[in-house]
Image (cartoon, rainbow, N blue to C red; front, side, top):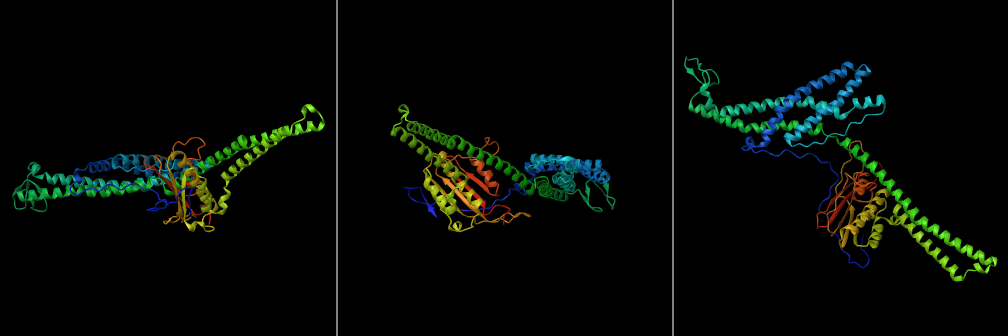
Length: 491
């Protein structure tokens, strides 16, 4: 269905070029190092410094690992021992912070910290949280595994570097080696490889230099392999898990959703108190005054005898106030649940476009007009999202046209392990030809904010959806919203 504001020509927005389901981001891969440029890259020497530094810290970290395991097993039979073991598990988080800092400074791997530790309620609850701290146990596993990779990596790296530099410069320093006697009684000054085979002739010296040069170029590649193993351990063991991120995001979204609902209720209460209630009070006073005047006329007192015009004026004013109060009540009720949604999302958005102060073009895929295509809550959310974005465009974009596209998402994501989340999505795209420059502020939203882009992001996240804003200055604004077809957790 396509609808436009009255008096405007119809047009359709350009078809979307790609669709995507929500995906988690991962750290960028390490930049490749050329074979011949490897020894001269700054990254190569930073990786060597990382291996040397972590060789020391990993040794102490391995001792911490065995101490934690030993203390937990040895003292675990007592309550104090369990508390000590739990404290050591949580303390392993500090090792994770140290390695993340080293990786960020020397490897360019910026891994976010895991979700902060939260102590449970009561003594036993707190102890259970400490002993079951997933981030602490993953950090302990990292201490054990990284010791092996760092030790082997440092040894191989230093050996390749030393043999490469030594072989390349062998022709300079071999003259200072001590004399050695061969099996045939001859004396030689040079490195010995096997019985009677010494590197002291020009051909052998050049061959030694060639081998050293080859080892020097192989050194960054060998070192990169071991550093990459440690990097994978940092990314997969010292960062937050997808489950913990999802729980934290849901908790944050739930909190902001509660705040948003409270703000909406306060706004409804304020509208009723300052608008509708005030008008009804005025109607009551006007009708009361008319009643008093009519009562005075019926008592026969001429001083209070009202004219028909006076009474008619009071009744007319009360009638007008009543109609205005009814209009305000309809607006408030429409804000709670628009009745036009009973006719489907396409009809509701068509009505929204007709009432919009700016030319609005709506295109809804016919598949979404079928009964039960969207859950009622998702349908209402989709309507509110479009209404808010169209309102923002009319107020701030200063453009001539707003295009709205609603269609099923071509991409679908599989549900997370143990999740009953839906796999199908509906995509909403709202764009305008205004001034652009829109941004979402989630870090420091205004108190009670629930109607701006930040509020929309939180409402969309609460149902496992996403909202992306592309708004270059002077080039208009495009907002892509991806919503599940049903509320997460429902079948």
